[in-house]
Amino acid sequence: MVAKKDIQAMKYEEAMQELEKVLADLENGSLELEVMLERFEFGKELLAHCQQLLEKAELQIREVNQNTRGATENVD
Image (cartoon, rainbow, N blue to C red; front, top):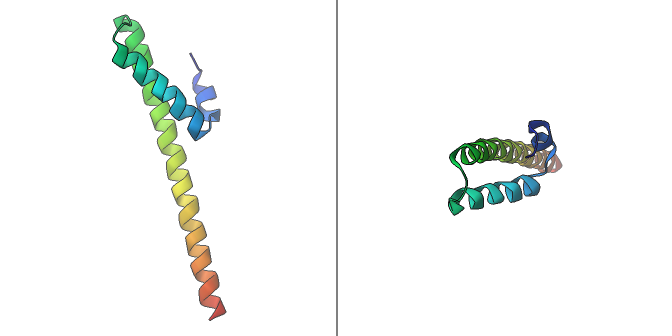
């Protein structure tokens, strides 16, 4: 299993790929309950990381849009 610090180092695509594996494991239903709970918790951590990365990207896009609008207003 990937350590929490390793999750934080993952790129969005890597984390989503791991999350898809977790979902496949959970949907398979062949895991013991304890292992299933561990995978579920791991999936929650991956999902939180992905959401954090998306929020960061959204903020960067908004900043670029604001800077672009400001630059075009100064040209007029």
